Every structure is written in C-alpha cells, then in structure tokens.
Image (cartoon, rainbow, N blue to C red; front, top):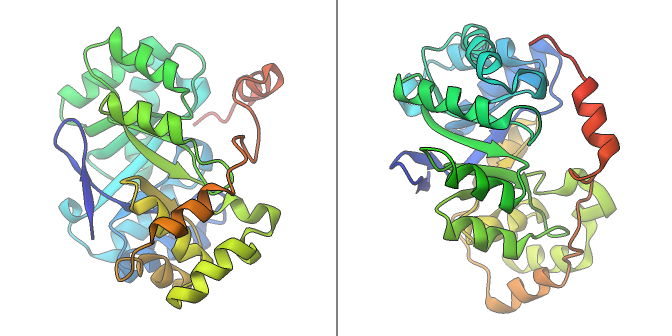
Length: 283
C-alpha cells in the first residue's frame, strides 16, 4: 500500500476505509473485518458515527498486528474543549479497545477549538496519538490553528470529489505542510456520478470502474482517500488502483466537472452550526 508521510514523519496509508453510516453493530464489525482482509490497513471512524465499539471488534477479529494498522477517530462537537477531549478520547480508546490512536481529528470547526487542540497536543506528547489533525476546517481556520499553537495539523479531512475539487484549498493546505484527506470522493452517489458520461468514458478506456477512476485521480494528487462500502468485492475493487495512470487529457476532462461547491451543505451556514451544536450524542 502506498503511504504519505505527514509533517511529523508518520506514514499514513493513502487509501482508507470509511465507516460513516455503517451503524448496525454486526454490519460495522463485519465490514471492518472484511476491509482489513481485503487489504485495507487504514480504518476511519468517529465518535459521531456511533460505531467505535463495532469497529474495534472488527479490528480485533482481523488478527493483524496493531502496528500494521492505521486507525483514525474524531472528536465530536459537544466534546470540543480541553476537558471534553481528555475525557471523551479515553472513552473512544475504551470503545475501540486500543492503547493508542494513529490519527485523532477535531471533527468540525466549532466550539472551543483552541482548548481542544491543546488537549490533543498533550495526548500526542504522551504517546496516546501518533498524528493529529482537523476535519472540515476552511484553509484559513486550519492555518490560524497552526500559527497560534505548538503543532501544525498533520491532516485536514475535507469533502473532495469530481464535483467539488477544492484545487486552490488543496494547494494552500499542502503549502502549509497539511495533508488533505478526501471524504465522500464519490459524492455519495449524487448526480448519478457512477453513470457520469465523462467518468464512464475514462473508466471504459482503462477497463476500470468509475470509483477506481475517482480514487486514482485523488491518489495522483497525493491526497489520502476514504471510501466506504459493505461489499467485499467493492472493497477489493477500490484497492485495485495502482496498475494504471490517468493522462493529462483525462485529468482535464475531470477538471471540467468541478462545480466548486459542496454537494451536501455549507459549514458557514448558521443553521447548520446550530444543528451541530444541538446534536448531543453523549459519546
């Protein structure tokens, strides 16, 4: 598996298995087990996914040595404070049944971000977290966090897909030494992406699927990619992206699909901020 070195030297597998919306405990455990068996070594979960225990069971069942795996979880909004991070992180460790986390992210750019970041820095110094970062932070918020704290975020996990390519933001993050990580690379199937004429044409040329073309497009940009499926054949398919390369004309055709906006919601929307603030999960 290809890896990318973060700004603190930690290597992260460029392909990760996402567990968002896999909420049934048995299905989540089986999906993680199958993903690891298929070849994934990077597993992504979050407090708000409400599946950390099941993810932990899938990891344990795999029998793969802990140091061969890269496990990510995220701090939910209600816990984004100094004390909130310290207490909720310990609960996440217990649910996952792990002694340390490879990557801990602040899931959203709200609440006491700076207090939470100081707690995360301390947890990293204690060896409980190997890498630290953020998710859904605008570039200016990520850089602000970097400039006024000891440690620069190592990753910013953001929405990136052919419809929302974030080219300038990706360049700005990389210039600061922050690796971009793509969630929803397939836009969760919106706008019939798997039947998009441009993408299907490129896929046919290489005898690949549209999903494989999208993953390859991101890999060639040195972006960490999360993809999710509960079907093992799709897991294997999504990993098989290292035997072809896109041409400049392929990339230009994909560039023309960019709409320059989220396919879901704006993180600057006051109503969305209020909704997240009200979503108390007690995790």
